[in-house]
Structure formats: C-alpha cells, structure tokens
Image 1 (cartoon, helix red, strand yellow):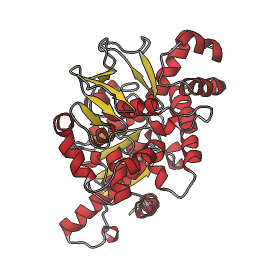
Image 2 (cartoon, one colour):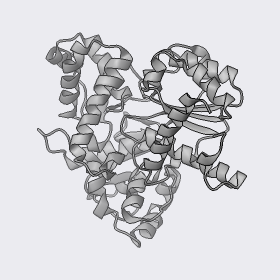
Image 3 (cartoon, helix red, strand yellow):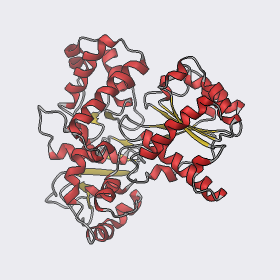
Image 4 (cartoon, helix red, strand yellow):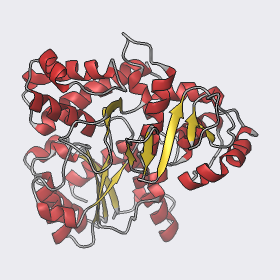
Length: 408
C-alpha cells in the first residue's frame, strides 16, 4: 500500500478506535447507503464526525462478517477510509487524485470530514462521482454551505441529509439504558395517553426533562468537561467558521455578529425589530437581516413564518435554535413558557413544517394541525391539541410536551 495511504489509515484506525459513539443515531438507518454521493449537514457540535466514524465501524464490521475476517485492518485491501480535509496534505494535493489512489488500492467507501476546508469542494466531488463509479463518498458539511454554489450539477447527484442534536428520546435512552422507540405525530395525537402511560410505567420522564432542556441536545454533555464552556466555544466556532469563513464576511464584523446574536437571544422567543437591531450594531437594515439569516443557517436561531412566507421577509417570531443555547444568556432567566415553545418548535421542525398562523393557535404543523403550547396545565379544556410542559401523562387534547421528543 502507498505510504501516503498508510499514513491516512493510521489516523483512521485511531479515530475509529477512540470515537465516542454512545448510541446509534436514528439517521443511520434512514439513509440509503446505496447512493454513491451522500452529504451530511448539521450544526456544529451535533456529532457529524462521530457519525462518520460510526459508519466506518459499520462498514468494517460488515466486511468482516462477509469475508470471515476477524480484523479488517489486517487485510491488504481496505475498503473504507475516513479522512479530514483539514490535513495539510490537501493544500497541494487534490481530492480527486487522492480518491483515485484509494480506489486503485481497493477502496470503496471514502468518508470525508470538514469538506468546507477544501477549496473547490463542490466541483471536486462532482469529478470524483463521475470518474470513480465504484466509489461511495459520504461527506460532512456545514449547514450554511450550499451544494449548488460552485457546481450546479452536484445537486442532481448528491443526496443530502440533516443530522440534528439528540432528541429527548435519544437522551432518555442514554440516561436510562432503555431503548424507547420513535412515534409519529399522528400516533402521538391520537394515542398519547396510552403511549405516555407505557413509558411512565418504566421511568419518569419529568425527572430528566429539565436536564435535557439545559444540556441534553449536544452530545458534548457526555464528555468530562464543563458543558457551558464547551457550548460557548462551539457557538463561537459557529460564528467564526460557519458564518464568517464560509460566507466570506470580513472578520472585523465578528463583534457586530456576536452582539446581534446576544441581543436576539436575550429576548427570544420574540418578534424582530430589525431597525432597532441594525442601529444597535451599526449596520444597514438589509445587512442585519442577512446576518440573522446566517445565524439561522448556522443552527443558532429558528425563524417562524406564516405559511407561504419566507426570507427575506421578516419572520413573525425568532427563537433560539434549541433550549441549551437559551441557558447561556446569563443576563436573563429563561422562562418556562419560552423553554416549552422553543423545545416544541425545535423538535417538530425536524420532520414537519412549522408555521405561525392567523388563528388563535400558536403553531400550525404541515398546514393542517393547529397547536398551542403551554408551560402549565390550562384551567379550561382545549378545543385543539395543546402541548403542556407540566404534564407527565395527558388527557383529552392536553398532550405531555416531553412526548414530542419521541418524534426522532
């Protein structure tokens, strides 16, 4: 085997062996792995690298079973390789040539991390796809990257998937060592009492829900570090890399971007006074609105629109992307109602379209289901489905809020 490949395989072996993969992500079984070019988008810190390494383990285990080998790493031809585009090798060597070298050595599965650090990544991936018909490529991408920016042909061949942070179900399974399954929105709406009773007969979700809202969304909570400090570092990396670097914004604008995010998070969920925000950070209204969109793309904010409305129009409301982020704003105590709304929006929009509505309801899901979200149990019966943060087991149209965390 070529010395260059040997060096990359040494890194691969170390990374796969030491990868922290505490649970099998649901997305792993939803992806059609027969596709030859797969993109994995997700906010910084949600576990994209570990996901790629888990995929490498799956491939190596499958090859071991198929060929009766106990250790794939002893084989002369190794079918799977994880690489990171931050390697200095790629400053003067092309991904196309590297892929060719890998294929010549018997490679079939190339897992590419941090593709945004490779200049001309879109065109190069398209060339790899066209030239090496037997090669399957999976790459991780920042959520602010658009696959059509450099090569429109790429969008016709790549299959893109989104990796989210831990759902409450995934968090609960990790904490309790159980294996609770997912439920569809329709199942939750029609059978929520029976579902909740089944789950609460085993554990009490309320004992874990508050901790999840504080630190359960990001896998880094499992590491032996200060979670708040790690999340703060992750958020700053989102600003400095996912927004400034990839969007090619002048680094001198970083303080304005950080202030904009802080001003919004200190009030979210809230309506936007874009003119006031623009004055506060010293930028035009149009530029400020673009920056807010970038913050949303980087998975720091969520914007709630009326149906058929979208950017560049002003949203009805803006939310923190998840409740963990809300807890980092030290100048405010996150209100229970705000946490409940943010959680509901974040967990529903993974699989469904979430919009504002002109009716009295707070949200409309998929243009069909109208929902209210309440922190505490209302005194009067609800005429529409209502997600209630204070409920462990529901009744009628009152559905436990935590149960929506079982959608994925």
